[in-house]
Length: 262
Ligand SMILES: Nc1ncnc2c1ncn2[C@@H]1O[C@H](COP(=O)(O)OP(=O)(O)OP(=O)(O)O)[C@@H](O)[C@H]1O
Image (tube, rainbow, N blue to C red; front, side, top):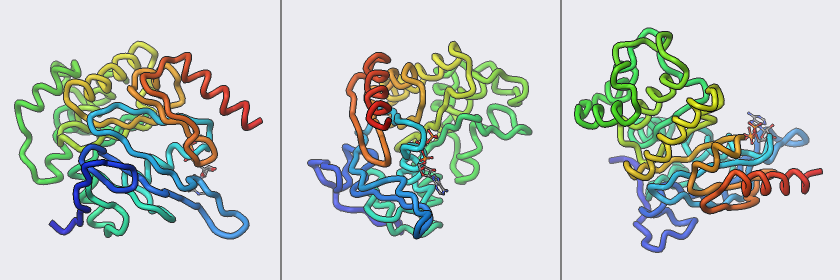
């Protein structure tokens, strides 16, 4: 393999990269633009996401949530600091190496589902495996579509499915490669509350039952409360960390942040 890896660090402190942590960032800084118009979207963020855990990222609009997710996923370059996926350091990888790493080890779920309209649900789910030239594990696919409740929709095209069904197909597509981590960007943003609750329950079970590491950006305190941990951002810096969040605790933390901004 041409992707370099740091030695495994048993302690797994942020800033080292470890097997315990699916993602680690140290001193992560992202500046957009230059000179007078420069925006410091992330300012020396140190954070680690434990493997097998469902975490949410929250914060006021413009606090850096999407930027953080994109930098952790290797979708955007960083200005300073270091980022690891497990023990693999992303910083310094070439575009080609990053593309392969994302394809093989990262899954994405988007607000807009991003399914290909001409393909059936099954073809959409299998697409990442096809692109990687890998054979689909039939038993895993069956388990996924059964768990996600879309086993009877596999021959349907996206336009023939509800939003909630499309998002569950998108989650199956994200999980089919057994990625180290799944990033979900407002995955319930386009769903009604019932379909949203089903999708969140599935993400939660993905962490609990399939030991999947899931990092979700959301604006919704109820959605965030499905996670096992909520990380708060404000002005590109960490501004809180809630274990076993409830909607009430998340709302209170957001209110404090907004109050501090006024
Ligand atoms: N491509 C870009 N060029 C310049 N500035 C950018 C760019 N992308 C983001 N920013 C700025 O970086 C800061 C963080 O943006 P980001 O989108 O990460 O915030 P967010 O918390 O995800 O916001 P929202 O909740 O509104 O989606 C904002 O000030 C934003 O205007």
